[in-house]
Image 1 (cartoon, rainbow, N blue to C red):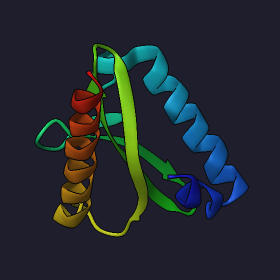
Image 2 (cartoon, rainbow, N blue to C red):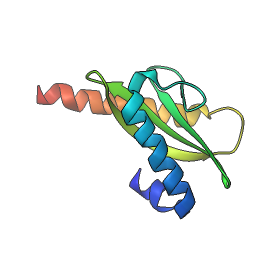
Image 3 (cartoon, rainbow, N blue to C red):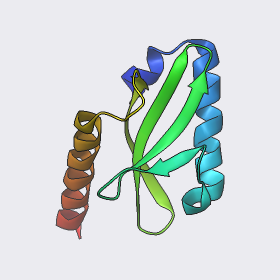
Image 4 (tube, rainbow, N blue to C red):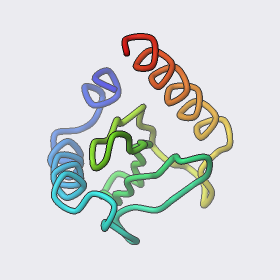
Amino acid sequence: MEEFLDDLENEEKVFIRRSIQRLEEYGYELKRPHAAPLRDHIMELRKKTHQGSIRLLYFFFDGEKFIITHGFKKKSDKVPDSEIDKAIEFRKDYLERIKRKS
């Protein structure tokens, strides 16, 4: 995630920070056009910038807490299945590690 953010233009970083702050503030209540469910407990944080559309994929756990798995610049109307699958794998791995610590 940090590498993705580092590659963004400064203006895009500002937009993304605001979007993350909005997610922190509203959590599950954040809806379209800012956020949308995808599948298998994966959500997308949506932001259009002057440079294009940016998506951050995330999931909720332990109430209102969330993990942003990764981000990408969207080039088509639909979020690619490969990006959703990547987020699902991150979620699965995270939940398994948390379970082992318990």
